[in-house]
Length: 254
Image 1 (spheres, rainbow, N blue to C red):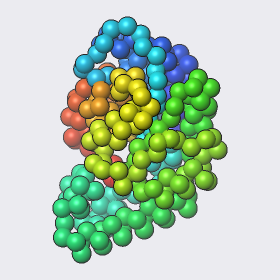
Image 2 (image 1 turned 135 degrees about the vertical axis):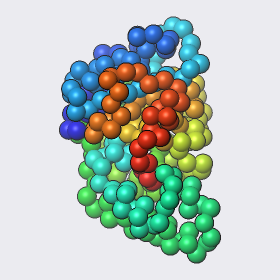
Image 3 (image 1 turned 60 degrees about the vertical axis):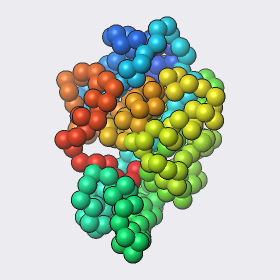
């Protein structure tokens, strides 16, 4: 796990900035998967995909949007315990509790917020995240952030765990609809004045980050530090990522 984003930094130097968006073996998606797999072996596999609406040529990457928990930070939230304490029955805790009666929803949000604030006390940047941020900054590629966590956690991350300039925009769950809806990613692309096909979405949740990126039409890279989604290094395209994720537990609020 300690080399996953460091490896992603190396793949960026090798292939992401100038890469084909066609659906051949030369796509940024395939290059990302192969580069990360080669760098860290079987422990960490990056599965990546492009939108099915591919365009020919070699466009330059014009933006990078990151998830926060488990991507920019070392995982420290016990989502299974959160689901248990809240009494969530589905794989999308935020959407589920939005449909609950007000009193029950309030209690659930209090539990979630309490656990998120406890996690802030032990928040640490993911090894390799800072060099990757420096890589994008040196090339004038803007960095954004989309998380299902709260804005106070994002502020804590920037203040205590992130030594570089902050991610801008940095959208938390007060921006609705949440991932896997593409709205937050599309909002960031509009702010930057770039097409989603020129942006990479990087995250550790197949069902939230990857599906969101695919729906927006962005390049997507899944960081799989625990080997949950290993498929023999095969490329996963389009909403196939959602089908891959269907057999696993959801990530939670991150």
